Image (cartoon, rainbow, N blue to C red; front, side, top):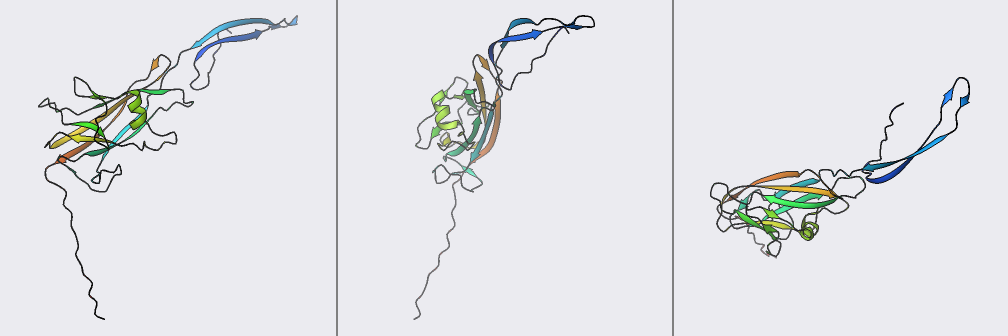
Length: 212
């Protein structure tokens, strides 16, 4: 034979030294003595595209929990929930970059909103193009899913610019890395409309009379 094929375990990467023992057999002398040889093997890491999902939800109570209200209103924060995780089998990869786009109106060039935490504090750094980049600490604190796959319990919100109404499409872009290898971008989008007006609540009044 003139070649061997080595099938490595999933996600194996690094430098290794291989060892092979060979002997021949012919029809007259039987088996030859063993001949040993060593060789170097280098497997470069290949990072896998991470899971990156975003969903916009109504949270009129502003308590970090989505409600069932179907609409989003002017000057009301929009709850954002994320599913963000690396998908490699051995857990050796880490999310190394996250960017959120869609916070700038292409027609006017103005910001449609910002990203804040539940207390209203700004989160992330706004780039010249109007996108929001997150630090590693912010990724871990607000975006990264828990080890059991559940969503991060710390909430982020899209806070519309004062009196802004209209369509918004937010897109999350994320990469994972292992060693010097960076994955291709994983992304997904969520669409919603900020409407004029306010929430209308309906109340039912009743009274109880004592006829005793």
